[in-house]
Image 1: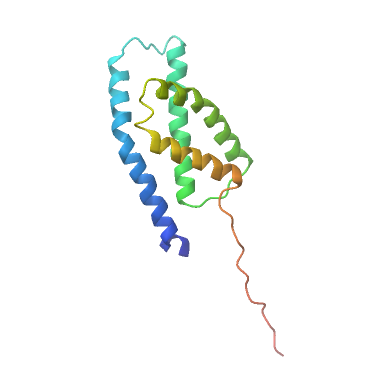
Image 2 (image 1 turned 180 degrees about the vertical axis):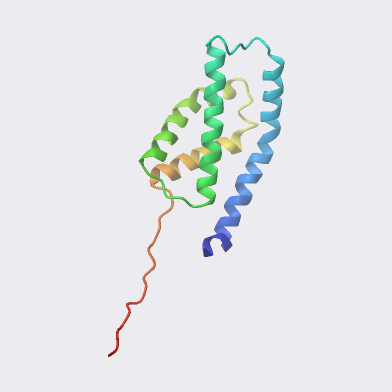
Length: 139
């Protein structure tokens, strides 16, 4: 419980909210442009639909990774698998955004996401068990 009162917890919380707030304008502009682009028809499964669905998956995985990092969760095989799949899905999006010079606007988020991938694949939080004193029974 002392972790939630520590400087590490509040530092991670402020860093992640700061990065998300700084990049939220880019995502709202992207949402507005995609709302104006009415040719995406979800009845057809096209390349645009796949691009949109992978972007949604990446954002959900990123937000979950940020929450796990803030709460100092330990990773396991399932979490590592989701992180690797989200990273593989994110590579084309990052390359595409850097080619069109939009990637520099979300560079802090890309750096945080890269660090989170490293952190999760390293094992996440390293829990050190608390050593409790042995109980002595007196007769």
